[in-house]
Length: 469
Image (cartoon, rainbow, N blue to C red; front, side):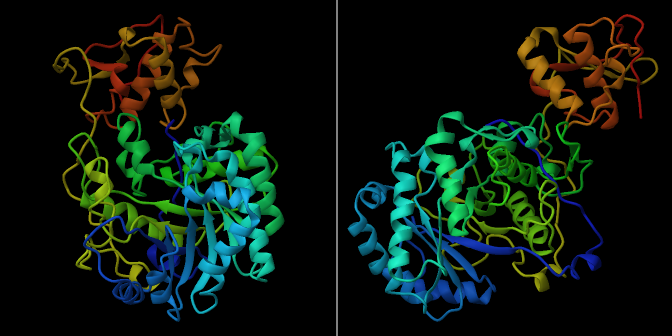
């Protein structure tokens, strides 16, 4: 996935708690484990943490019975494996709703049904059954007169986007637009529902640590990123990812569809190559996200769109397959002890502080051709590595002049450093601007190996490279 970038304004804490309208925090209760507490104990845990929304991945009777009378709003799931039956048979859809929804409602406050989960990446090719299944389940709700109270949607992964960066250029994959997205968005509009989205800034950061700052990924204070397409400034990767989806819907003329983030999270542990997976970063991401959502305000593109967000996940799940991170997204251990301490309510936020380590971690290593010795003036510059290749240089140049915030006015046509009009010269100027603006800190002259540090002033025509801002 192409990295995308997003926004969070750090306001005075006292001002944050007087915001009237705000979003909502829920949690995903996955159960791919053999050591979790009983459903009854889980409900008590949710209530003790004031978590009043939960999303489950099935319709397990023990879980739905335990949630009865709890006051917790529930999103249930019709698994991908049942999409074919739900799409092809109205009697199956009717029976499923009667058995798994109507039998528990309203004592168990089911508010939504997720029909499938990330269907477009399902290896069993269930995409063509998605919208027919959604429609049949909805008609089953109509028969039970539950359609006004219970909404239907389907969580999509960000891989459903063809473009996600910059956010303003967000678009859905072309092959999905006519057969799936247009009919699905039309269904959501007609039924007053919302689009469900699973968004993981961790994946974008892990794959692009050379160009995405950790502070930007964790909602920490940072200079922000300007979207060249619409001029909006983003301060967090999360907001940019969400706005890319909003932009994709807008491109299809569905500006009126709401959005719910059905999964987002950050692992507290990972394999050696899973950069950024740590308890400190997970606490920062989830804690700052809770503050971002509960203190009101939408995204730069949709400032009035208060979001409902479901954290992934309630527990570490020891039977999940894949890298170590997959088993370490939990907010709690199976013992019900917190993996790290973050609040889930506005009241709890009053005493919350993002406790960052004084040591700067996992910064990209300074790339280049050997070590750097100081010049007689003590200055260093950043220049393009011509051996990196045109494609890599162009991508890094786009980043530097876009979200990187480099001053690229001088390399525009007619400006002082436009000549020589070569990719390497323009990239060198942009990389150096970024490097100098960021205090020449280690890792700011790397760009995935497309740049390196030099100790003598670069020479490209009559252009002078600055040494500080």
